[in-house]
Figure (cartoon, rainbow, N blue to C red):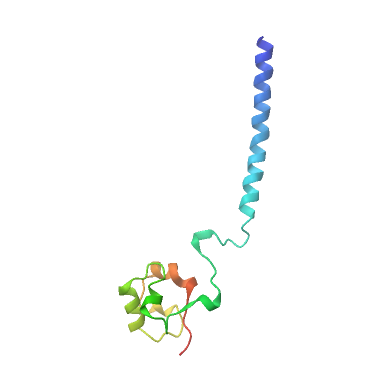
Length: 111
């Protein structure tokens, strides 16, 4: 009976040692399934046609952006025109934390 328990324990130990490498392979395959890193930090690429132009957007359009409410949309509009979207931070129209949330969704087309 003691031999039966030892062989059962060895059998379970072998299963555990086989499961760990299998688990690690599964995790590495899952991590490799997003090669461009699109899921990182919530950043998504927006088609150029869907970008919001900070030089011509209405307050309502600007307010559809994350972290942009009435105050920030009016600051963006009152600070126009912009040569590039980075001027929103350079000219202290928006704080860097807000700009980071919207920078992949906006553009500053020249007027």
